Amino acid sequence: MNQRLQDLYAHVSVHATADREHEAAIELLLLVMVADKHIASDEIDAIREISEDQGFESDTFSFDQYLGQAMAKVRAALADRTVAALLDDIDGRIVSTVLRQSLFSAARDVAGVDHAIDPDEHELLAQVAARFD
Image (cartoon, rainbow, N blue to C red):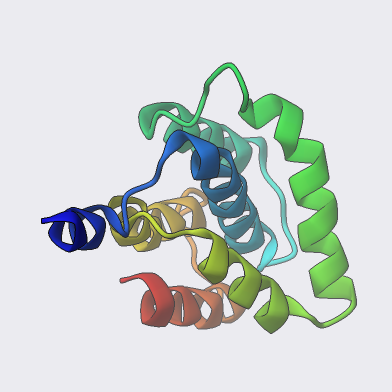
């Protein structure tokens, strides 16, 4: 019985890992946002709304407090051409099956906020789909 419970809950986010997963999800959505090298307040608002809708906000995690750190991490990955490594890191931190399944849709929503998805965004969305859809 113990193994069955462990298998059942193996991919469920627990409080101890939830903040790491939420940070990773925000980084992924910011990466999608900046893929076209254009940042719009509507896109940031969309990510904030996704964070709220997904229940990320807690006593230990705040989108607004993490935004600067996450943006710095994303920009560094773009500048250093280490986006694949960042995606690997994000992929490794998100263990919740439910969150993993919702990320591609959220990423597509962020990319489409400006009503245009450019080739760089398409390429990144394909990578996100391969990992999370």
